[in-house]
Length: 316
Image (tube, rainbow, N blue to C red; front, side):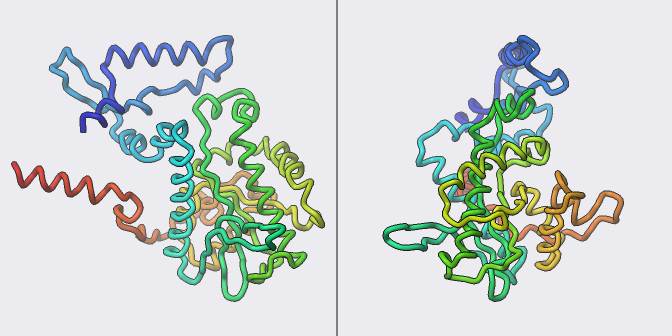
């Protein structure tokens, strides 16, 4: 508990100093949009004060949950490669579990090897089978933008590595569609109108649609060495976050989900979140299905922490 408090809390005076330093850095040479200055409370949502007996306060308690979930990414992203590999593995597994739990008609397969010994290949991360064919293909990218990149004047320049990961996901989907069409991939029929989806941790992509031409150009460049790829394979791709996908699945059955994914490719829905395509703001709210998992199913430490809490209560 003490380690956690040290990680997510700061003394009031220190927090004020840190906030001033961050704002000064971001506003230097007018490089930041003044309407979007950082909140240090997102990193340190708990404030302590020696002046009042080292008591703690959280001005926005919801930020504690954000810090303990999505906020952990920035503690891990600079860690060992094995740590990020595990995070990516869990992200892909959660995507599979979520789709199958929300839409039991779908069968979801993880990445699979195919090809030959001379040219070994892999499928995208998730293949969604509906009946006797693959209808949706997901490439998962556990990619998040830093605060500075989210609100930079030139987001692509500020986070070219993150955007290039999105372009890589697009190119991987195109390669798979080409290989399915030309018979290199034959394990399961792929529907001619199968939808390709780049699934991300963050919902930032909808805010940066102006960068899609650059992302597409990079994806084309990455596919330059793919033999026999044609424009039909290099189709438009859906971009969505895991939260947006769950919001869609929570109010949709399998047919409605496929319908929304196909609508998302139409020009009139460019930049829309999937949940808003399913239910535009002017329509009545849809009934939301219950979350299909227990917390311990997706947060392994939950039972361990709960066990420690029960032991302390028994000792007390």
